[in-house]
Image 1 (tube, one colour):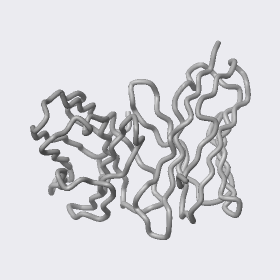
Image 2 (cartoon, chains in turn cyan, orange):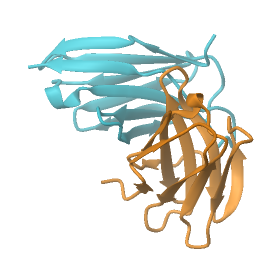
Image 3 (spheres, chains in turn red, cyan):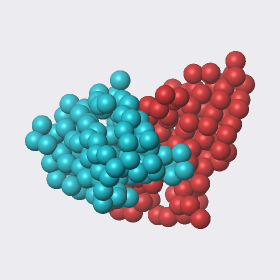
Length: 110
Length: 114
């Protein structure tokens, strides 16, 4: 079983829809990152979470440490949100390594 | 623009060859990370440097090596290249190299081994 499982693998939404991407993990973590990768390859770090909830614009990330689960929500989705969203873990205290999920490919249709 | 610069953007070479990928971190960042992204394995952590010293090592092959220079730029050397080394190689940087820091990624080097 992979340490990090993301769902869904692929997601197609109409512009304006509320979107949720899920990340479940099986190990203890010190932090969880949400990354965005646009076509063409560049990666942007969206959030780094160790507890609770963070919000930036239309993006909201939550984490439940007890349930080993995190969600990334996009409100009022837009075609420019089309990208691959990747969940990544810092597992264990003092770990500098990130373990990555396989990503969720989001396509937002106008 | 993340402020992290990677060169070259694309590299095409043959099996058995050696290549060097270069990364300049954001101004003020002391830590550099290298990652490999392939179609079958996804993103994998290779190695981390902090202020010139190796800090953490991941799934880096013995044929691969890296270093961070006094001006903080880093190079990833890949030798005896195989077809399976074809991948996108990312560099990222952070200020202090602590596990809870936000990472800033370069745009990657696409390596094609023919």
